[in-house]
Image 1 (cartoon, each protein chain N blue to C red):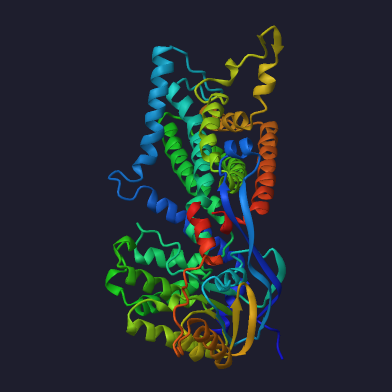
Image 2 (cartoon, each protein chain N blue to C red):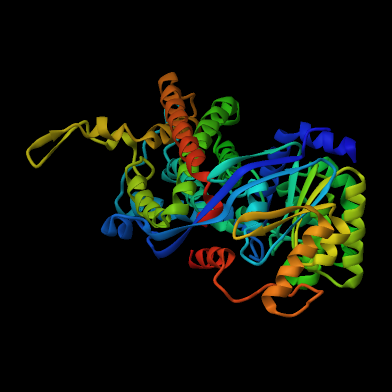
Length: 274
Length: 280
C-alpha cells in the first residue's frame, strides 16, 4: 500500500470563547489580561488516515468539529495538539471567490484568485479559456465583479478553484451553489478529479452527495470521531441516530440545526465579535 | 494532470512570487480606481506638499535652502522633495502594511497561503510609487541641468535597503495589529513625531551638537543620529540633491537598520501568524 495522502494523529483544536475581550492596549493594561474566556475543544483527539486517490466524507451535526478539522487539514488553523502529515499539494474549497477584489474585473480576479490558490501564471494562461467557459460568464468577464450576481460570483470562484489540480482537495459544503445545471457540471468535475487520482475530502450534510462521491467516511460528534468506515454504513448509522433523536423514521437527514449552542456557533460568535 | 501537479509542486517559490506580484498589482490597480485623475494623484500629492513646505519655510520663514554640494543646486522645492518622497514611502508603507493582515481577514480565514505576502505586497505597491516619483524627480533634475541618472546604481542600493527597513517594521506592525488594534492609531502619532525627528523640512546641519535642557547638557546630535531615517534621508539627499554617491559609512548604517528591522519583523510575524485565522 502506498503512502497515505493524509495522516492525522491525535489532533485537537481548542478555541477560546471570550466573555470579555480586550483588543486594545489600554484595556489590556487596565484589566491586566487580554480577556476572560472559556476554553473549549472543537476537535478532540482525532486520528484519521486517508489513503491516496480516495474520496473521504466527514459527516456530523452542526458544531461537531467537521469544518474545524478541515481547516486544520488545510493549514488555515494550527492544531493545539497532535500532528497532521500530508503527502502532496493541498487546495481547500471553503469559500468560493475568497480574495476577489470587487473593483477588479472577472479577468483580473481569475489571475489574482488563481495566484492566491497557488496556480502558476503559466498554468492560468493555459487554462484561462477553460475557466471562463466553465463559469459560463464569458460576456461579463471584463466587468468588475462587484456588479456580478451572487450566482455568477460563486460560479467564477468555483471555476478557478476547481482548476487548481491539487493532489488533495478539501471541500466544505460549497457544492450547494448555483443552479441545477451548474451543480451537475460540478459533480461531473469532481468525478473527473477523482478518476485522475486526486484525493478528495468532503464535509457535507447532503448524505446523497456523500454516498455518491465518497468511498469511506467518518462521523464526528462533539469533536471526536464516533465511527469510520464504508460510507453507506456510516451514513446509515448517522441517519439512524438522527431518526432516534428526532423521533421520526426519517430516511432523509434533516439539516441538523437544533438551535443548541454548538462549537461552530461559538466560533461564529467569536468571529462576529472581532 | 499528473504533469501539472508535478510542475506546481516544483514551483512552490515561483507560486509565492506570482501571488506577491498579483497582490501588488491588485493594490496598484485598485488604489486610484474610480478617481478621475488616477495615477496622477501619485504625483500631485508629494508635489502639493512640497509647495506648501517650500512656501512656509522658504517664503514666510525665509530659511535659505542649503547649497547642493557638488551640484550647486539651491532650491527649497528640490531640497524638500528629495526627502519627502522616501519619507512618504515609509509612512504609506507602514500604514498600508499594518492594515494589510486585518484588511484581508476573509482571505486568511478561508485560504492557506504564505501570510507574509500581504504586508510585502502593500510595501511593494508603495515602492512602485516611490520609483515612479523618483524617476519624475530625476527628469526634473535633468531639466535643471543635473544628471542624476549616472547615480542609478547608488540609488538602487539605497532604495533596496529602505525597502527592507520598511518591510521589516511593516511585518511586525501587521502581526501586532491583529492582536492590538491600537497599533494603527499609535502608528499615526509616532509617524508625526518621526517626521519632525528626520531632516525632511530642514537641513540636518541645523541640528545642534548639544543643547542645555533643564540644566543638563544633552548631546542632541548623537541621539538624533540614532534615528535610521536620518541616514536614509541623508543618502537620498546625497543622490537627488547634492548629486554624489553616499559615503560607505552611511551604507553600512542603512544596511544595519534594514537587517535589524527584517530580523525583528520576521521573528515577530512568524511567532504570531499561526493564530491569525482565530484572532481575526
